Image 1 (spheres, rainbow, N blue to C red):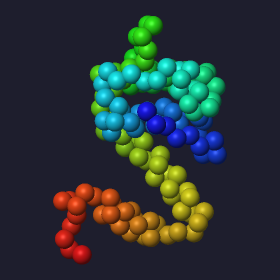
Image 2: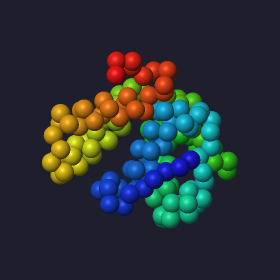
Image 3: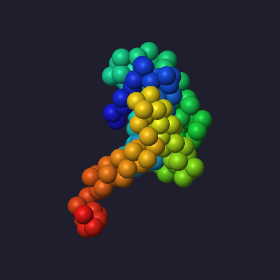
Image 4: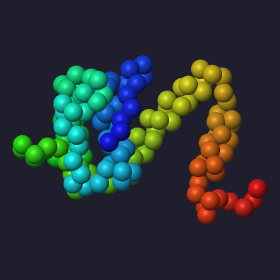
Length: 134
């Protein structure tokens, strides 16, 4: 499980962990029943306080994304294997908000952003899905 934290993001570190784990679960990169790293291991890997990871894991458990099994660890719950569409859209909306804020700071117009998103979408599609209109 690879997580990328940004101390300058303005989002608390524990929430960055929560959001990234939710994204990994929603995208299927973390499967139901898959074990998350132990708190101390993840804290060492991310070079953060173990209490921060513990708080993130508690939030994920309250949201039903993970379940804790005494003495054996924290696992992706069966119920959390596919986050509700509303939750997936919320995660994407947060990323869009950050993009729009940064674009405004860089004086990039909304039309340019939309064009760029379309271009990037086309570039990232597998070859068999690309449109032949170009």
